[in-house]
Each structure stands twice: as structure tokens, then as C-alpha cells.
Length: 149
Image (cartoon, rainbow, N blue to C red; front, side, top):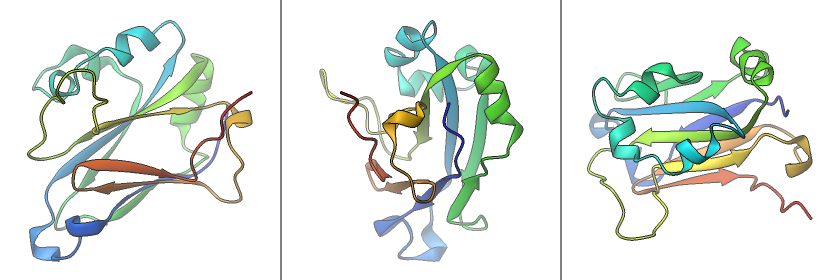
């Protein structure tokens, strides 16, 4: 399993006016192959609803953004959550963001509030860590994982 710093940053219009930075919560969740189908099909809106059992029981790292919080936050590679994910043989990292004003996508569209990243070291060519940038209505990962052949 990959162990690298994972930074989440607010970008674009979200940071133009510091006085109007919205409150955004982000969860990084390590998921193993057994849990994967449940997580892939789970509603992000339901995940963020008060008292959601899947969110409450998740092995997650939480980040909170807002006016008085840093616009860049990093999960360091030596954080104990990586050990927890390794013990449960997590293969995917789910990045879930509670983006204000966004609901469920129409039809089969991917939910822009959820990014799924592989935790296999073979899926990455890293010089530094991974950065996930949150913009209005989307999340972008840099560098992008490489396609495994």
C-alpha cells in the first residue's frame, strides 16, 4: 500500500474572497475489496446526512475547511490512519467532500463529490505526494494515477 503525503487544497473561486470561503468537510477513507461495492454504490448525499452509519463506522481521516481554517491541509504519510488502512488491506482511497449546494448527479454521472484513488504503489509515479484540489463543483487529483496494464 502506498504511503505518501496527501494534501487537499481549496482552489479556483472557492478561495478568491477569503471572507466567503464556504465550510467544507472532506473525509479520506481507506476501503478494502470486500467493502468496495458498498462504497462505490453509496449515495454521497446519504453519507453526509446526520447520523449516517457508514460514515460513523468508517476508518477515515477528517479535514475541515472554512474561513478560519487553512485552505491546504495534509494527511502526512506517517499518520497512524495509514497503519489502520494497511491492517484492513485497503486497496482504494475514497475522497468524499461535503460541497455546499451540490446534490446527487443525474443518471449515471459520476458524483463530483467523490474521488476514488488506488492505494497500490504501482498506480503512481510520485516525486512528491498527492494533491487533491477542490474547486466549485469538482475535485481534481494531481498527479493522476497511472493506468495499470
